[in-house]
Length: 288
Image (tube, rainbow, N blue to C red):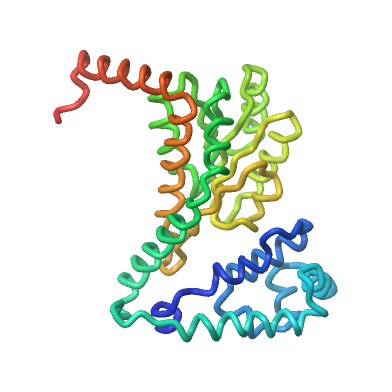
């Protein structure tokens, strides 16, 4: 990673802006996601290289560019180069380059700033909170890297929701457990879907929709593969500067969403919290 990509604001958001408000096919979503994930180098890739990156055909890349309103991929690439040039021209003299660990943490701070700006419009989070608050039981799905975040959300959600079910393992039983939750009355599922996007979780989201559940997804990008299966997408960027991804923004988004769940039924949430505190005091669960 070069230093200018750290000092300058990354072009990811401006690349993502190219796709806002445009209905993309699943194939086009893969192309868009590849461009977002490789925003720093996308401007210098040929149509064939983009096709290879997204695992699609070269004509699909051309059709994708035309769907965005460009004459073809060369015109889109010129726009990507303009975005890259603008990004490299914007520096922050107060933010030193530092070592790779410092750069990774600063990038996470930027991800949180982006999330804060995104939450200026709270409609999506508010609607998602209401859907999840009304679901009995509430299903929380997260596999592989997302499993700890699903457990984290579910741990706190259980303090304000009477029935939270965590689905954190794949296999044939995953669909069984989804169907059982639906039969028990579940109307919504929260899925946390992070790179590298387990195929099992995407199949589970398709199944959830097929059986009539509302799907809320926390994922790293509005053009993530999970977005295709979601009714509401809550994007929160993932840090990719270290050997393993950092999930600071998705964790923050999960807690923001839980706040929206509480806000959707404040009296019930407060009552359940008070009952928990009384129980915790009686059992002397905590020392401080």
